[in-house]
Length: 450
Image 1 (cartoon, rainbow, N blue to C red):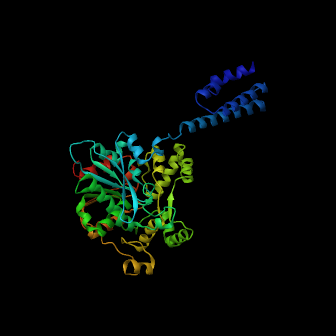
Image 2: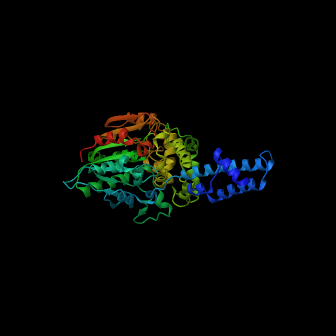
Image 3: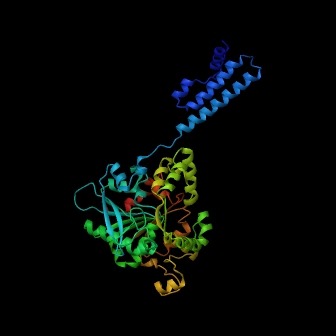
């Protein structure tokens, strides 16, 4: 029959599509129907290859086969789901085979902060303590996005350090207070200054009391460094309790940041802040709920989507796309936008407008007079940071830029060393694929032995 001859000819030419193969190849059934329809056209036409019906059927056949191949490619291009993207920080640590403790510490102004501890693996006496502090809109989970082989928290734990992962007020692990309700504006009336003045001292003193140690090492990223500097300036006695402070992309001056969108919005910071406060929004930028669903739909379905979102991250943090594993995109999404206050974000815009300076929150001239005894905000004197500081910065960092880091290096009271990784952006310090070899091995070498 003509149908058989058509199939034979197609098999010889390699043009034939087999519905059975489509099932094995996991092509959607709907496309099988398209192919059967095209073949049916060939059968019904029963005419020479010069007739219009025959030619139309062949064109349809080739077109639908191409679509099927694209469907199959897209199917196999799906981004694998990572179970840890729905885990809390303690659950991730347990999932990776380590013991974990959850602790709570109350600050002197009533905020309750959750700490996550990975106790030392060896029981041969007290171990050196390392505290890791996240940056803005992050949490303790940010140190666990990378797999254990290149996660700083896991690398330290594997060497039997006593590892503590901190959280500062406002994120999902630190949204409690002894009397204030996080659904009310009063809870969210804090800036960098309160985090540095209350949270960091409370965490450090609690850890030293619990471990019986007199000192600890502090490793911070971005704002996690800025609030450390504030703590050391406001509480100078803490400087003697620090073995080493390692600043990864350390925030201080914000005068030269180059992220295009932020630079456009920064001059309108006061306006945005006033609008948000006027409608009762003091705490924000928490992706929980609908934003998480949208992120999943936009970034976590296929590798093509993940590449698109990686470009967005690079637009914010700086170029170096090949240093971010696409498989980490789901974990990044579940560990970013963890919430903070409107004043915390506003303080970035204020410091940008202030130029090369590291200043406290600007309440306006009346508020400043009441707070600081001056119409201008308090300028933090970084020379009062006498704890030993080691700085690591990125040449491609658009948020904490090389120019701002260069300014910081001239201000610190006890700078021990500074290293710049030429192609690193702001996120490479946490999530880079080469971060162990290029950074973490050096960082661990600076710490006291476990």
